[in-house]
Image (cartoon, rainbow over all chains, first blue to last red; front, side):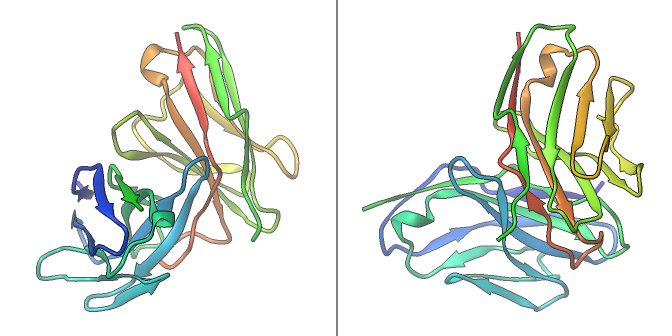
Length: 113
Length: 115
C-alpha cells in the first residue's frame, strides 16, 4: 500500500548547521508530497509542498525537491535556528481527489544555541 | 491565521468508558478529518467527513468510532468503549476542499490516555 518513510529522530544540530531529513515514499500513481511541521503545543502546519516530479517546494528557508526516480522528498535547510526545533512530518496524497493524507512517523529536530 | 481548536487538550478515561473528543473547524471549511498518532508511530488517517456524512474511513475506524457534526460549528469523534490501544494523540483537521493541492489545517490535538 501507499506509505511514507522518514529518517528516525531525534536529530540534534547546532545553530547554523545544515539540515537534511530524509523522506521516501511508496505510492500507486503520482502523489503530491508535503512537509508539515509541529511546534511544541501546536497542531501540524503545512511547511511546503510539491505536486509533480522535479518541483521544488520552499518556505522559511526550507526546501524539498520531488524526485520521482528515487521516490524521495528530502527536506533541507542551509542554516537552522533554535526556533526550527519541532517535529517534521513528510506526507503524500494521491492525485485522485482523495480525502486521505498519508503521513510518515515524524522526525524530531533539536537545535542547540 | 484562522485556527482549528480542539478540546480537551488531555483526556484520561477508564477502559470501557465512552469518550467524546471535540473540534471546532475553521468556519468556512467544508471537509473535516480525524487523525491519530500513537506515541512514536505514524500519524494515521481515521475518517473524513463532508456534507454530513463520512466520505472515507480507514480500517482503524471500526464500529467503536463515530463522528458527528451536531451543529454548525462542532465536529466530534466518539469512541464508545475505549480500549488501552486507543491511547493516542487525536488530531482534527479541516480544509476547504479535498485533494492533492489542498492544505489541511490541524488542531493542536487531544491526548487520550486510556487506563
